[in-house]
Image 1: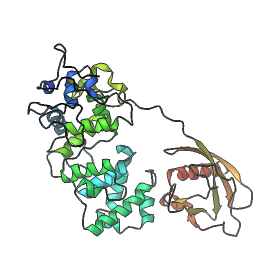
Image 2: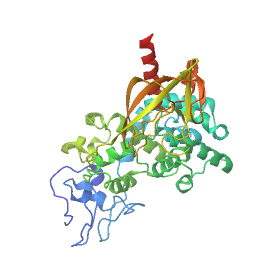
Image 3: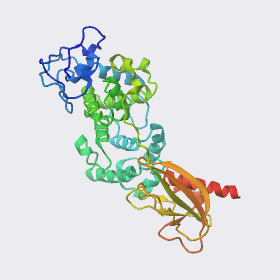
Image 4: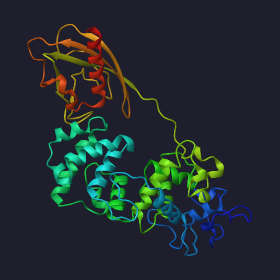
Length: 414
């Protein structure tokens, strides 16, 4: 398809009013914003303002491009809104203040992966009280960190947290560039960009789920995810300013979290409403997501073994699902297979109920069985944990649910 010149009629946002020259016969090789009806989106395809195609973007046309030197107002509009409406979060610096401690930025970003701000706040407060800096965290036993992490899920993050803290302590401080930050365990493209921008005020293109949604709507990118992520990142690159890129990244996150929400976005109060290509075309439908695949459901058993007001806990293998964490003994279920159904002790078992729990790629129906231990120890290594201190064991959510179910079953018998 040929990218035609904008029609004379139709509203164009101010920043789209630039001179764009395209050689006759130039073709756009990819299905991007230039095929939209909005003329300003065509300007995006041609490289936005003066610099042409930004780093990490793509030149949509084989022709030369000329444009005015006036940058679009999106960063200015958004930062003005952020200065007035920024969320007050414990790991942030207020707009205009010096950049926050890199340790707090890094810790919060790791915790926020696949987790809500509301869930993270109490964990962040607890962690920074016990381990106020990266050196304190680096010196902590992994077992203590895993116990403090219990309930946040995605426990490999906690193991990587300890590894990364030790690496940073050995380096004498956090690296400042995205490339160096990517070398830390548990730090991916998004996290490296966020730390570089927010903690070190480096220009970096920060795209999380909230930013992804805002950009997909702003540029009306209709290609389904995950294929659209390349175009979304390229579009985000074109509007990321050289200065205050950390504030800009957090402003985009706040906009997506509070205004440009997945359902019923508040377009009437959005500072970018006048620049949004999707506003008049149903913004809720963007970004387009591929149909969800049904998760497989695994069947397993967990065993509550009680003696003298203590319960038998085991430590899971260091790697793999819930690695290194204390748990109730189980029958060997995994993400790939059901459990064997074999108990760790011979004897009578009482069914306390079933816990239904969802992991990222599968769900499990975990039957909880209660039994009393004979004088002999259960097979395998473990420890007797006092029931009145069970909340200190750091059980992951699945096994914490199982423990509550077992205790509730016992209470019903009394």
